[in-house]
Image 1 (cartoon, rainbow, N blue to C red):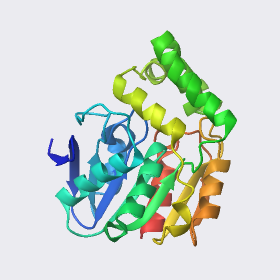
Image 2: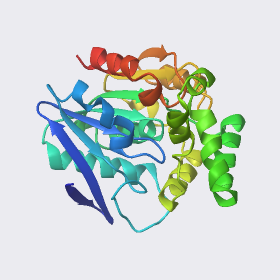
Image 3: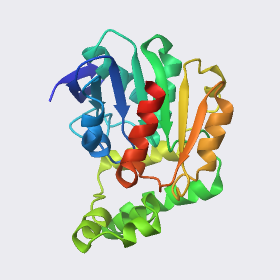
Length: 258
């Protein structure tokens, strides 16, 4: 797996396909492959897809300090720099949506278009803070409860209820506790990008998930309202839309980018 050095971090990334660059930024506790690997063939015929793992995920290593959006934005753009000299379209999911906004704010010349999926702008929603705080505390108390809790928030009830037993066990037992994920949860708890949004000058699609219980869909609507000229749509899904409604997500991304 190729890697590049960005400040103190060694950033691992993957590229597939050929054509204009498409940078896919993952969410908390995931990797590029985990969130997007099953979607690659939908894009690689006409795109060079770049899948970085930012600090706390995959094989990427750093100095272990508390994470910032600025750090993570520089890391994912570092992967893009290593893959192509041309501006890239950026898709960010969950915490990755905030990283994508920060990337566009810090280096607007490198970002052609944005797609922000299941993101948020502010850190003062008490209900959302409760959810993230409980998620973080359960990691210290009981890894199994930590995994079960976040699974309940990531998916709609009907999606989980209709899985076969083996797939269900894999879905609700797959959120292992590791220090990198905890650093990402802590960043997600405090991150606030409201001051950046009015200055985003690239075409932007905001995708909300109508049944999101981790980051309620109102947060996506607020992102849309705050970004000048942005486009908005909602998908019938829980938070983890790349797994729950991948076809609808791919269709939204492809329609906007094309």
